Length: 131
Image (cartoon, rainbow, N blue to C red; front, side):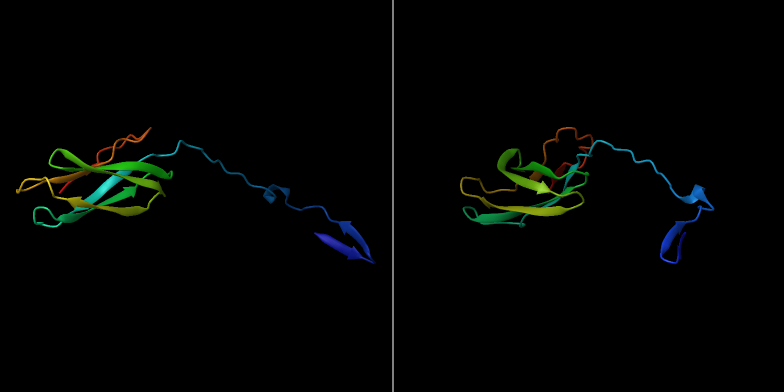
């Protein structure tokens, strides 16, 4: 404590010096790189020659901002590559595009979306979704 006596400052001895500091340990780890395709949606039908809006919901499940590509397919044909830029950890976003059906035969198409593995990504189980 501090005592003031006639304008002079004196210092008292600390009666419990053991409680004057504490410490803790912090471990620094590599960032976790993990992105996922949560869902893909498309209209149930579209007239041949028209466009359909395809939407893919993706999430950054890691601990670092991520920039990555989302590949979208109609059956096994690559339709569009979309780029997500600097998606923050724990955030998700929808990426959409217009699929022009001109040149595609009438019939049913199975849409899928996938994210190629990121550098140092270890959990790639949720990186592909089929609608």
